[in-house]
Each structure stands twice: as C-alpha cells, then as structure tokens.
Amino acid sequence: MACVTPKSDNCFIQSDLKHSFMQKNHNTQLYQTWNERWKGSEESEQLTHMGRIMFGAKKKALKDLIKYLSIESVIEVGCGLGHTMSVYEALNLDCIGIDVSSHAVANCKSKGLNAILQKIEDVSVSYDLVSSDGMLEHFLNFEPYARHLMRISRRYVILIQPNHVSFFGKTLAYLAELIRSDKNVFEYNYRIKDFISIFQENGFMIIKNQPVFLDVFRLLLFEKGPCRQLS
Ligand SMILES: C[S@@+](CC[C@H](N)C(=O)[O-])C[C@H]1O[C@@H](n2cnc3c(N)ncnc32)[C@H](O)[C@@H]1O
Image (cartoon, rainbow, N blue to C red; front, side, top):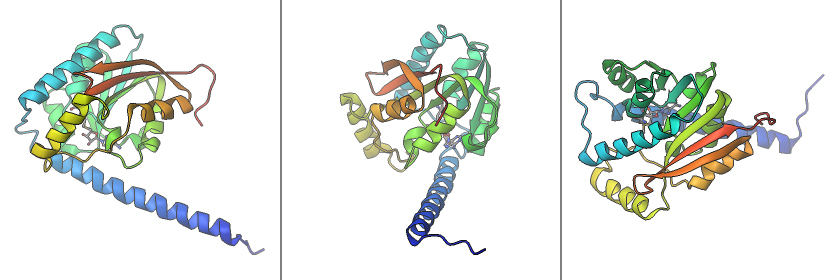
C-alpha cells in the first residue's frame, strides 16, 4: 500500500531534516574551532593574569560547594585545559573529563588528569554529578546539550556560566572582544534565567545560584526532582 503523507506534514519533515542538518553542520564547525583554539596548548599553555584570577575564583566557589554534596562519581563535560576538573581530582572524587578537542585532552593528560576524547552526545554512562564550565553558551541552540547533561546525571548538574547582564560581565565581554576577539570562541548572549528555565522544565530544580568573580559568572547547582521523568 502506498504511504501518502499530507503535504503539510511533508513540509514539516523536510524543515526538521533541514534544521537537524544545519545544526550538525554548525557543530562540526564549532568542534573544529575548539580544536584549533587548543592547538599547541599541550606544549605551552598561556593563561593571562586575569585568566588566573578568574579560574582561582571559580575553583574556590566550586570547592566550597562540593563539600556539601554527597557524591562519588563526576564527569566534567568540556574539560578544556582541566582547570575546573582539577578541583574534583584534588578532592579525590572519581572523575572523568571529556572533550571534543584532542589538544585539550592531551593537555589534561599531560597534567595527570583522567580525560578522554568524547562528545557529550555519545556518553551512555551516568554520574552522581555532571559538571560543565563554559560550554553551553557556545551553541547556537544550547537546549539539546543541556538535555544531554541531564540525561547522564543521577542527581546533580553544576554549570558555570557567564552572566552577560551583570555590569562586570558586560564590561569584561566587551573588553575580551576588543582585545582577544581572534582567539575567543564566539559565545551567545544567553541569560542565566534561560539555563534555569530549561533545567526546571526538565525536572531539575535550581538549588544554588551563586555569583562568582564580581558576578561575571554564575555557579548554578541543579538537583534532579524526585518524581519527574526527563521529557
Ligand atoms: C570554555 S572550554 C572549558 C574550559 C574548562 N572549564 C577548563 O577548566 O579549562 C569549553 C570546552 O567544551 C568543549 N566542548 C564543546 N562541545 C562539546 C561537546 N559536545 N562534548 C564535549 N565537550 C565539548 C570544547 O572543546 C571546550 O574545550
């Protein structure tokens, strides 16, 4: 029997296919950009003075928060050069880092960190804590990646996100664009409440929303709600 698809459905299917093709293409380019960004970092890593202070503030906030959580296993998604991941390692948690950039992974390995080349899309194991610092804002549409973070979380998700509406957040983003636009990987202007909405809609409640480094960043802790399944 011939399968007849109404014209309007056909249009939707075609537009869905086009959309997913465009998204895949965008991500392939984004992943190449990240790999270029970290090229050579395994030989010499240059962190600016500002970068050192910024990571120091993030690490302290993360460390102070983690000690109150009852967790054993952690995955750091988009581990980059391992600054965030090193906090989990220092706390002797069973931690793995994943990244799409082979240069980032080589850099982490040279520091003795347990990192592998993998995309969040391909992770099938789950962890007590899923953590990600500075990844979601680089996607044209961050929602599918936020869903992947939730999918592999047994209990908590931690995000560290730039707060583009704070005074210093705006100022620093402007200065970074002015001084290092050739080096920076483009980030979209999401608001903190955009991240919170998507997680809450999917049954992950916000339990901590803490300013870090003069509110340039927010440390967000989500906990999986007791009775909702991921939609
Ligand atoms: C801003 S960097 C993270 C820096 C890191 N927090 C640190 O401490 O060095 C974001 C990272 O996310 C990685 N990434 C982007 N898309 C990814 C994906 N789908 N799965 C895993 N990692 C991804 C990038 O390669 C990049 O290294």
